[in-house]
Each structure stands twice: as C-alpha cells, then as structure tokens.
Image (cartoon, rainbow, N blue to C red; front, top):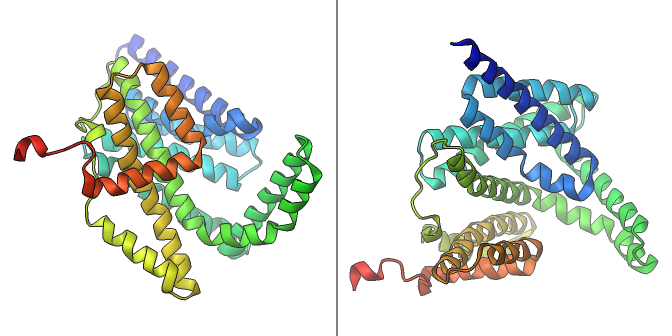
Length: 317
C-alpha cells in the first residue's frame, strides 16, 4: 500500500475512534442531546465500516470499547448498551455490502445485537452473582428513581411528582414485563432510522450502498395480520403469563405496522412534492408524539385491506 494511502487510512481510523468516543461521552453526560447522539452512534460505525473496510473498522470498534471501558471504570450496563449500538452499525454495513433485502438488512443486525445482548446480560449478571431478571429490575428501579429526581429539579409541581413517586412500584412491575418487546422494538427502530439516514450520506460520499428499491412502497407480509389477531385474543382471554407474552408480541407488531404506515406517509409526501423543511418538521412531530406513532401504525395495519398507495393496481387494471 502506498505511503499516502496508509496515512489516509490511519487518519480515518484515528478519526473514527475519536468520533465514536466523543459521541459516547456526550451520550453519557448530556441528557437530551446525549439521547439523540446515542441513537446516531450506529451511523458512525456504519460509515467507517463502509469507508475503511472490515478490518480497519474492527480496530475502531475494539479501540473505542477499550478506551470507554477504561473511562467507565470497567464493564457496565451503559457500556454494554453503547456496544450494542455500535454493533448495529457494523452489522448494518455488512448487510448493505452483501446487497441483502431491506427486511434482512434490518432483521439481521437487530437479531445479532439482541442475541449478543442476551449473552452479555447473562455473563454480566453471572459475574455479579445476580439473576438477570433481578439485575434488570434493579436497573429499571434505579432509572425510575433518577427520573423522579430529575422531575423535582426541573420544577415539576410537588403533587405530580408525589403521584409519580407513589406509582413507581406499579410502573416498575409493568416495565419489567414488557422490556423484551421494548428492547426488540427500540432495536428495530434504531436500525431502521440509521439505515434511512445512512443511505443519502453514503451516496454523497460516493460509497456504494445496497439497492432496496423504493422504500416508500414497502409492505409487511399479509400473514402478520394473524399475529395481531392472536395477540389481541391473548391479551383479552389468556392467563397472566400468556397475557404478558401477547402484550409483548403486540408491541413489536405495532412497530412493524408503523414502518408500513410511515412508508405510506413518505409515499404521499413525495407525491405531493412537499418541501424538505416541511417533511423534517412533520417527521419530528411524529417522532415526538406517541399518539401519531399509534395512528400511523393503524394506517399501516389497515393498508393490508385498503391499499392506500394503490400498489399493484396499474398491473391488474
């Protein structure tokens, strides 16, 4: 390899390590900005994996883990979380390089991260000689207590703070039982979001990306409707354990139909040639309002029968 190329590669590796470490520090220190910084951490690994190649990106990944592990004082839940985010970006790039379908490009990284995360949780809880469920429960309880303390600092009325504090046990009980679905849903959302953001950035940098076709015409498999029916029946009729299992399944299915619903929204934004600034504003509103997420998921669900985009009509008509 020529000296200039080696120097550029070295600068790319150092830059990748610096960027990922900085993003992790911001994510760990700043509450609001750090949250969005954490969500985009996979994007950094994806970019450097596509730019530098597998071997050099592995150096970036390993060096970042070692540096931040030392900064955090060893293995912690936060470090495992950041490692999972970086793994999403790395595996996303692998799937894009293999030119897989959009479904596989999202499911494979999400599945890999969840699988590795379960192994990491088991190993970490074993090292502490605490059961995984107990560890998760303690983590949830600690973060709920931190949330109440934050509400007190920002000046929320004492009556509302007291109401939340008195309900912490019930909130913890529910959260611990739907955490599997929340983890799967958040992993799918983060993977999907970083994939969408990465495509135009990589193209601008003239880095080859997979051809997924027109994403705003994507549809979920029609057989998933039966999953919704089974989950609804389970929530209404099953015993306590199966009811929680059905609730977890329903949460994940809501996210799948949200993907289909947002594809419909994007389809009509494009058809109406809505200005980019208006699109950004509306997408931000959707991201910030849970009601909009449920509404769009409902649109995606009923699209199975109503075919809002009239897909396939021109072929059969």
